[in-house]
Length: 557
Image 1 (cartoon, helix red, strand yellow):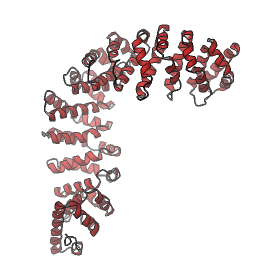
Image 2: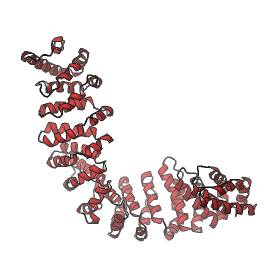
Image 3: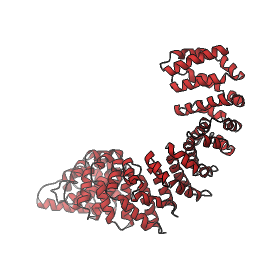
């Protein structure tokens, strides 16, 4: 080994005999690396040979491919990557990506990939040096060369993880090249390699649309059709990957709308057929796809009018007892989105969606609980009759109160509070309020008034004002125990409180003084002084309410 990296090797001349000797030395180095990569790499590092390699990396040199190969081999060792960078090897290697020699291109790609492996800093450097358009061009030119194609795909897979790369990829024809390549593949491993590149790239909305326009969706649907009934491990994996990628493409607004085609599109119709499938994977993908199509009112209205709700309820029915949690979550997500347009709410309630959703009230899975709550909250928005019916359902209200204490699951806790408030706000029903009081829900609404989210604070204060106006005597003790008056004093005194919070707090104070014990609390906390200051508030509505509240407090005192 010592003879391989002797001063003779470092003495580079332009004579033919030296070129032959150099080739021989490079061959010996490659042979030594093949026998013991780590030990040979250490000796190469100590010898200073890496600094010499930078000058050998030229398109004109016959040794270039072997030098790049040696660099690729030594850079397989993590401890050699920084020395390669310090030796200035990256710039000449990047330049070599413009050469036409396929062996040089292959070894150059390997060398760059190994040097920059697992280093976002170095990968970002490559992106800034413009390797992405160059690699995409190489893929198009050398698509018949399996080794070069694989090198490009590995490079894409590594670079695509960086957000900064996606903008550059979007300015190339990478979508067209990848779809073209994908269509030619028969082997599972090759398809899987392309999938691994497509998934991170498809997170970019511009590339999503490019992939749709390049015909990727048709490829994915064909895979689904071929693999859906297979029990082979590779086919099951392909089915999952293809259907997951299909759902990902629908996350882009433009790509989603292009595939929806006013609800008449063949892609949309195929996705609908997945929902009654016997494959849990396709059921999941179908429900998620519907949830993604249901991202604007027009699509939602069309789908509800064309019977999608019944398909989703039938799917949920298949998963009530010991069902697939991911399918439950996806179907509930779709129903929640469909329930957002005002015109859909009554139709969905008439179709029995609330009853279908309530079957999952016993679920112990937080993701399902979260979507269940969101779906019910959307359904009862401005639907007084439905809100009253649900609000009088003691089992539902008790479960909500239980979930209001789910501190380990902030989303479930927040949605439970919001639904509790919504039942009161939309029903304006004394029966609903009594059910909530009996179930111990008042303290949670009071706590909700201190939320860091203004919308939740406001919903809580409006619900509490309705309680005070409609059933103050029933709720009096709970309001007192929850220290509502002290919380209102704090909200009104806090300069950071939003104008609507101050306004609704004063409305609530005026309602609370109808209770003797609560009135005494109000009087003992010098509310007059706090409210008086708000008469000069910059928000006119707040200032006017402050004047009214001050008058009311003065009369009661």
